[in-house]
Image 1 (spheres, one colour):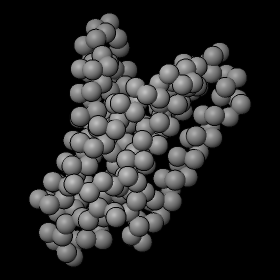
Image 2 (cartoon, one colour):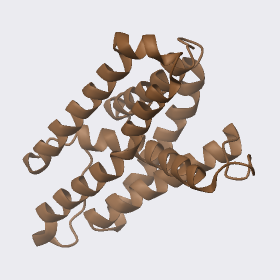
Image 3 (cartoon, one colour):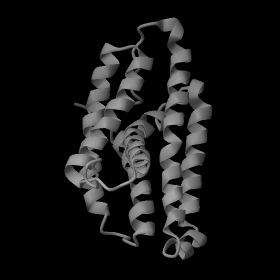
Length: 199
């Protein structure tokens, strides 16, 4: 198996950005989260990359992309539920609506950690606009979360940082749909074509 270090580096960078926001800023835990995050996300990225390779060889591109995102999100939910303890049944007294929103955020986050490297490393002109938009989105999220205003208000109003973290999560399914549509439109005349992972 040929190692693709850029795929893992980009995936880890996206994961670490979110962990830095929630752990470093919200919880004021600046360093202790780094090693646990590496232990959690690196095996995840290795696994989903192999799953993606299998899907690419058996499906047309649009279906493989959809399946890849969904499977990655489900794997992430299983990790959160069974390993971290953030399952839907861990707090029976919680508000059902908030629980659903929270779980959708978790699903979106893990799916996007797996999906971001495919987008950012794909150099095709057909998705250049989406790729640029996503880079600006990440930069904006990092700036808003690490600005002095966020640090000053983080302890007094933790919902500020939480909302910024949720913003990173909530827009990612939209990004996935746009990227999937761009791929599908680009390949529709080549029905059955297989997506080649970025070199």
